[in-house]
Length: 197
Image 1 (cartoon, rainbow, N blue to C red):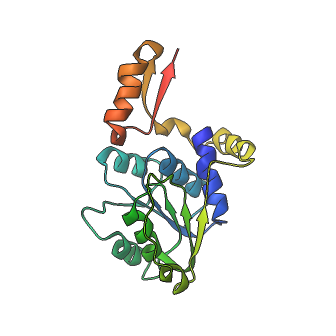
Image 2 (image 1 turned 90 degrees about the vertical axis):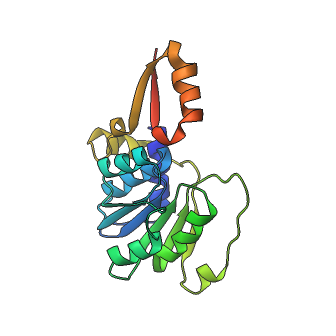
Image 3 (image 1 turned 30 degrees about the vertical axis):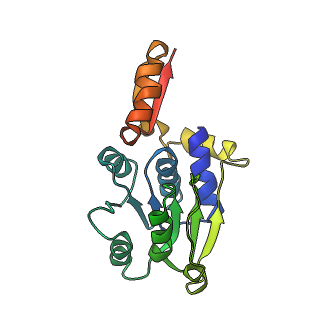
């Protein structure tokens, strides 16, 4: 429930409403829950930009209408094509890289919103004209604030299926090798590993 609440908070920060369009950069735990919460909000289009094969498959499974691999095509151009040149109403950066943050501005419609959900390991460059010339609003989103009741309601009526995010179940005795080491070595293979005592 906790990561779903993070995704829900990001969607609420964007004031996302039915019929709007979005792109999510990164389909790890937070990106994936953001996709699910966007899908529950009744969007016209949800796009995901992701490079890891397993996470691209996961994004399709949980409701992405289109998945773009930035190594294979220009994400901003693909979004423009998918939206008939308008761009998406909201971009969510859950990847936290210079390229994803910059591309979010290029993919977002004039007057749209760029929501940063990522935690950054280092500073990046930002051209203020990316905001000014398109009147894009930049919003920060961290964790959640009073989202647990709404998260439980989304999960109770299956508008969000957290079980779709579980990539492996392990026993407590396997937690080091199959849990911590697996995530440290193969982060792009997993969304959530559940430990069952």
